[in-house]
Image (cartoon, rainbow, N blue to C red; front, side):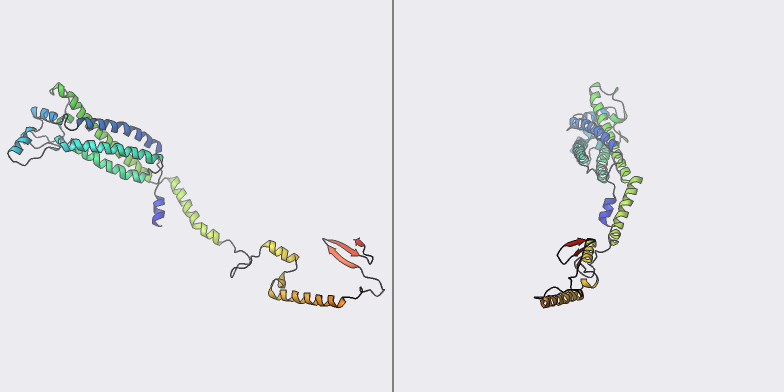
Length: 316
C-alpha cells in the first residue's frame, strides 16, 4: 500500500457531527467570557491587591519583598501566580483560541475540518491552557515565614470575611478566570477524545474500504478478460466485425476470396469473361438444338424469373 492509499485510508468524517456543532456553540460562549475576564485583569487591575491581601492574613509572601530584594541586590523572582507574565499569557491564549474557533467553523462548513487535523489543533490548545492553569494555581514559596505550598488563597478560600469587602468582586473575578481556564481545558480535551474516536474506523467504513480495494484489484483483470477485436491480432489491421463478415458472405468474398490469392483468381476470371465477351461481339444469340432461344434463368430474393425469347418475364 502506497503513501497515497494510506492517506486515503485515514477517516475524514466525524462519527458525531452534531456533537461537534454543540461544542462549537459552547466554546464560543466560554471563550468570550474568558477573553473578557482576562482582558479586564490586564495589566494589573487586582493581581497586586489580592497578593497584598493574602500577605496581610499570612497566606502568602509580601509584594514589598520583591522591592527589598532588588534594593539589597539579592536574586529573587516574582512568584508565578502573581507575575505579569501570567496575566499577559492568559490574554494572548484567549485571543488565539477565539481565532482558532473561527477557523474551525469555516473549515467545518467547507468539509475540511478532518478529525486528524482536529487532534493536532486541540493538542496544542490543551498544552497552552494547561500551562495557564498551572501558572494560576502555582505555589508561592518565596517567603519562608509565610509559605504557600498550594494554589493562591483566592482559589482555595472564600471571598467573604475575613477578606475586605471592596476586594470581594476582584476575588470573584480571579476565581472565575481560573474556572473558565479549567472549563476550556476540559472542552479541548473533549475535542481531542472525539477526534481520536472518529479516527477509529467503524464497521461500515471498514466494509466500504474493503469493497473499494477489491473493486480496484479486480478492474484490470476484468479488462484483461475482454477478447481482442477480431482482425486486430498481430498488428493494426482492418477489424473484422460480424457485420463485415455478413457482407463478405453475401458478396462471395468468404474463404479464399478474402486473401490475396482469391483476389488474383477473381482478376483472372474477369479477364476470361472479358475475352469471351470480345469474341461474341457481332454474333447473334446462341440458339438451342431445336432452333429456339433458351430461357434466361434469374434468381432474385427467392423468386424465380424466366425471360422468354420475346422478352416477356415469367414469374414462378
